[in-house]
Image 1 (cartoon, rainbow, N blue to C red):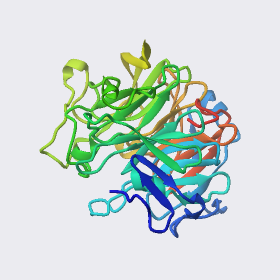
Image 2: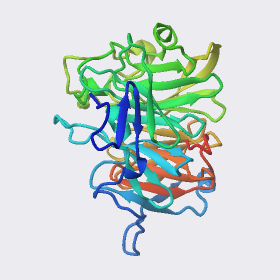
Image 3: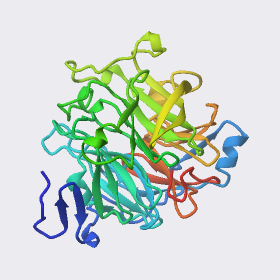
Image 4: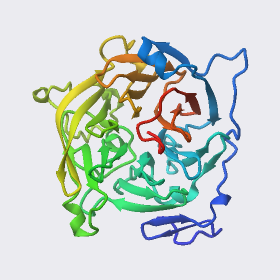
Length: 403
């Protein structure tokens, strides 16, 4: 459990709220680069544009890229939330020291444009195995915890200065498997997030689990206590092997979910949580696709999903096979409704109707991405060991808060 008063006075955990007492004391460790790194003339380019036509060319006209920060550990993996108050991206690492008693995830902030990285110790003290995040549209953020062992996953709110974290949920009766990604539906005031079961079925850091996995909806106005339980709904519990990334279109009428799974990843053969069957049109094997849903408001801060369709599948077309394109992990949207997916070969860009427009080829691929900067036109690509920025001619759908 987290301490109630840290001995060095740097952080305090009070119930379900964590607060850094002096955020200026939070510093990057020696694994980080402190300044942007530019490639020499002899180095291969950081990002290679692979255009399929005019639509892609217009998005990246005159684009440039550089490595903003890098590490010898996989520190740049998920979240990627633009924080306008501090001019930083909030990011989470991959699992570090996995399989040991010290297995954990780091939470960091990358300053733009300096590239300075600071570790957010106070947030790590209460947000266990942090994962995806999103803006609250008021300068703050929501961040997901995957939980650990018997402790359920959870949802946390982060203040605009990256100093305080307050637990939002789940209700005490609800166990979350290993929440992965989250978005905020402004029109309804509801948080939508994915809850796959990677933590118990594939990665082994969870021992408790929910017999269902899917997409949840939770109104931010939900009452506390027993009244909260009735407000948390599983919106979609079928036709997804493992719901991963989640995204809303600019007008919030469409929701996209990346479905990501390979049976070879399964390590816990004693637990197998609901595999879709042919009745719902799903292959019970590997999944490398992005699904699309209509989002409808149903009152009381709630939404419903309908009209499930396939947006794109990396198993089809010119993806180059799983060895090259990998799996669609984090997904984001620009103001035109184009969908950007972090994949094994970099960032793939699709039109709102699922037409492949082109890709940003990145060695080592992209786990996640996020628009940011004052004008929302700088794309951050999270490449595990590197945080790469790419200038664009468009902006994120959630600007000025990043997408």
